[in-house]
Image (tube, rainbow, N blue to C red; front, top):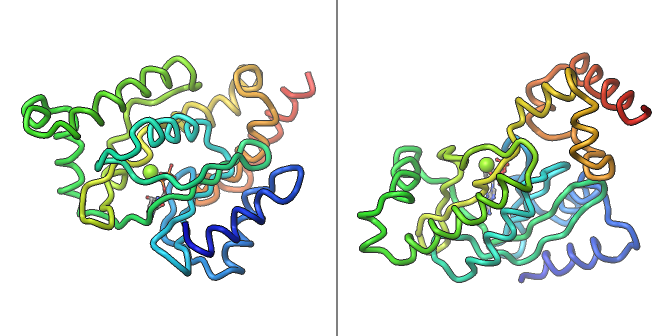
Length: 230
Ligand SMILES: Nc1ncnc2c1ncn2[C@@H]1O[C@H](COP(=O)(O)OP(=O)(O)O)[C@@H](O)[C@H]1O
Ligand SMILES: [Mg+2]
């Protein structure tokens, strides 16, 4: 771990209750971390003092499965090094991990294919091992994660590690289109499936901030608030 990460974790762990995702992001920026990526659920920041990234999500029920994969597969060259995981206020998550680079889209697609290619497994035991582990954690996610999607073969989820190797990240996800549609059309179902204190910031994920208008988000918030009152 580098100096900036030590300062970050000391700050995150100091209060009795965990900070909110936006407070962590403010703290990171104030300490010199710089933005290095944004997906649908999370934003990533690069440490000012070492090859380390912080990934912060306001709401990401899949994160615990991702963390479980990185921990079980620690040392496998196709998985990133995980330095720390902290739960944040209301269902947010912070992951501190090795800094990765983007990979060209075609190369990333070919790695997604290779991941489940028996011929590739025969010549590459690490790839076979990571594929088995990914499938195992995914099977658990399919029963434990509400509206769990198939493995996320988005090319941005194969990145390049410091030594140049392909690295699989962020493979498990909640189907956001289903979840956010249900927030409007079946909020009682969402309220029953995800505890309120684990979805306090569900309307603050980057995808909604980018793609949904304030009216639409306002309607979803109102529907969920009414479901929580009943
Ligand atoms: N370890 C990392 N190093 C550098 N950038 C990262 C790292 N992890 C994530 N990112 C960047 O942040 C983006 C979002 O992270 P990701 O874990 O894929 O979350 P999402 O669920 O939002 O897709 C990625 O597409 C990538 O650009
Ligand atoms: Mg992603």
